[in-house]
Image 1 (cartoon, one colour):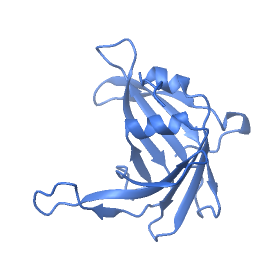
Image 2: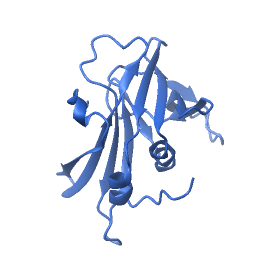
Image 3: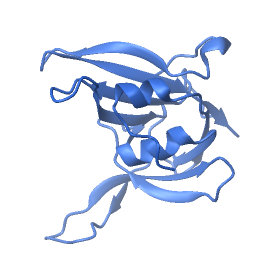
Length: 173
């Protein structure tokens, strides 16, 4: 989890280098901390965070989007969702999320659960991340394991370092 940053660093994408020792790859990680709004969850030492990993790309001098994740810090409710096309009796684990960009209408989507146990994070797709980084403010609500809403807000700074490092064409609105 992202620790409480000093106030001056609260609204910037912080960049760090991470190494995947299993694959021998070093990649860039960008972290943006947010805040809990409304009633904050108890016993959560860290603020919510958006994390984006950009991996090296052999075909380009720029990197590529590797992963995006919302770190909440409390166990999240997992729903099992029926896939669009059924081949047997498979259901996929999902975290139901509501999000609002700027002052737009709230939308509901299903994000994949993070790999941590218990699940305290949700996975972001590249397309979802593109939407989020174009906004000025982002409000995200997910339910904790008891079904209580956990509301988070992110004030979005300039995302140019993330866009360049992940080679994400962000020109389309």
